[in-house]
Amino acid sequence: MAGRGPAPKDPERRQRRNAARDLAVVAEAPVGVPEPPAPPAGLLKRTRDRWADYWASPVSKLADPVSDLPALERLFALYDDLERSTAAVKKTGHMVTGSQGQAVLNPLLRHIQQTQAEVRQLEDRFGLSPRARLSLNVTLGEAAKSLADLNSEFLAGGDDDDDPRFDVIAGQDVIDGETA
Image (cartoon, rainbow, N blue to C red; front, side, top):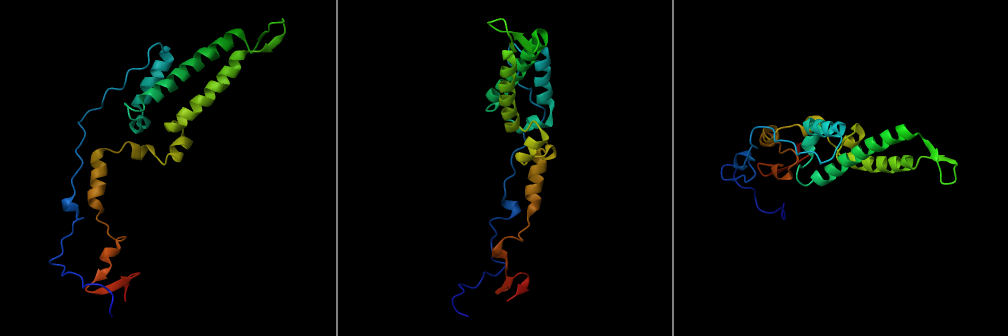
């Protein structure tokens, strides 16, 4: 049949440029856990403890301690603000006296509600709830994989089932497992 192109190379002469032996292995990161960044100044003890708990969790492996740090600091500052605002509402009550002597809803409640909305958005960005992790297509098991695990999966792959270049066997086309 004409028009099919040149005959394939003899397998002995063929050079596979995508063979696993030619792939460079990504250098392993230095052993040891890097120190977590210091918490923002002025946080309550409870918020500082929460900061330390975050950096000790597997979820923190997904965050870049350099580029994500400003947003994470903002998140923990919001957590701190919520703690302080909630404590103030508990002290003063849900109803306070208005300018005309009438009972009005504590203005801090609106502030708390707005702050909680901002916190939820940042939590979703960093996968800090099960639903947020699902939306990011991340499981904690995958997040905690070491570089060595990822390299071994990559090098052991070698599965060329999806590569159409390997469907030609001895000059015959293979279509869906059958020779044509």
